[in-house]
Length: 112
Image (cartoon, rainbow, N blue to C red; front, side):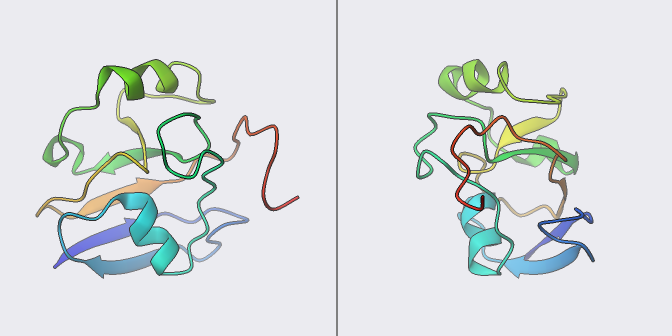
């Protein structure tokens, strides 16, 4: 099992969280299954930036982002070199430390 360590986010995960998942699941699906409600306005089809996360540790264990994902990441708020769309980032064998950015550019938020 791989550990996903979510850093505290004042709205989505105020205390932070540590979950264990089997490799092969996306970060977004793993979060959703564990009641960490990362937004995903495009239904996880790599067509927006609402599920943007920053991988603080373990980034190199993920497969490289596709050109389409990279194009969308260019539009994300607060993008960093270790940013990924959580709907596209598939967990491998290495533990990950994940930061959910404070803001998203979702114009049609599910939670508002």
